[in-house]
Picture 1 (spheres, rainbow, N blue to C red):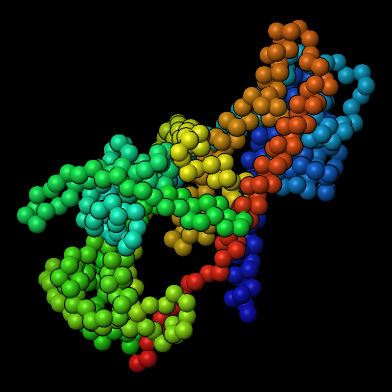
Picture 2 (spheres, rainbow, N blue to C red):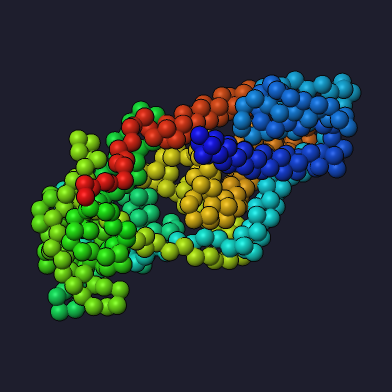
Length: 478
């Protein structure tokens, strides 16, 4: 009972940390508007975190400080910047306020994104100092080809080393936007073209170019469509981990640390390949390399664990776990490199969304719920590296916040900057009724998109409405 309570408290603590991070980002962004407004002599009515009617507010120093009920964004109410009643509510402002100069409006509007960018640099300095976790992406060799997959139909084989995807050179499987997995998933063409090197028995290699189709998971209710897959898995060493008591592996004399190199005389390049051989429950001969470099052979007949009988998705296994081959190291990119990488990530995302044959769409963007889920998952990583991932992700989020707010669109800061420049040229303010109509229309579109991505975020967080098929730890009768 106590363990369950502690688990709930731990989860609640992580959720609070995620909410605090969001609020820090919002507060710093709005603080930029607030300080710029004070500097330029603007009247400030309210400083509010989150939208909607305040659930808490207090008036100090002539400003109403509040917390809204809609957990998205925030605002500083500056009546002289324009009519924003549809977003911020009515402002309690004096009737004799003098209009702000266009330059003042531009400075106040741009200050929010500027402070978000400065916060990104603050987080980037922390990452530079403490380190950013980096996953070893492995090489680009195929370890397993799923039967009846597009890759199998195209002729790809385990052991093939991929050297390019759609003409882009590649030397690792995963870890950034330029790995085999990402380049396939985010492809912009109607097919996937792979340049490969295929090993021969004599040690030589042959170069081939193979064109493959791809598949995507069916889109379910409240679920985003899946990314492109062609049915290949990376090569990884098949190193035996913990052995379950009473299992076929225990009876066959297998030992932790041994590496499986072949099954029934056929080389294997991945643990998945080994597991697929075991699924039929037929006798197997394993070729092994011991930790001291010597070799061995073992005969084994996979079996279904006693506690798996009658369960959906259960298949015979040999009865051992695997040693995780993924290594995480720390790198220390400079603050400027981190900001540049975040900008490139944004640019690449826009390009993928805009490409006509890409599988990436607006639906794959995330709102606060989706981002919060990612942050929660990072903080619950079992290796304790979560806080480093979160700080790095905070750099990306703040760069995104700065850039998106500077887009020349109504409501956001970039729209105010553009209107300030237009007012400079016209030498008079834009018509208030026309501005209110444009801002109101854009607000409806923005709210609609926010609801759309939030529904998908909730669906993804709930597993898309699908039941989990995860099996319990296997138990064999001894």
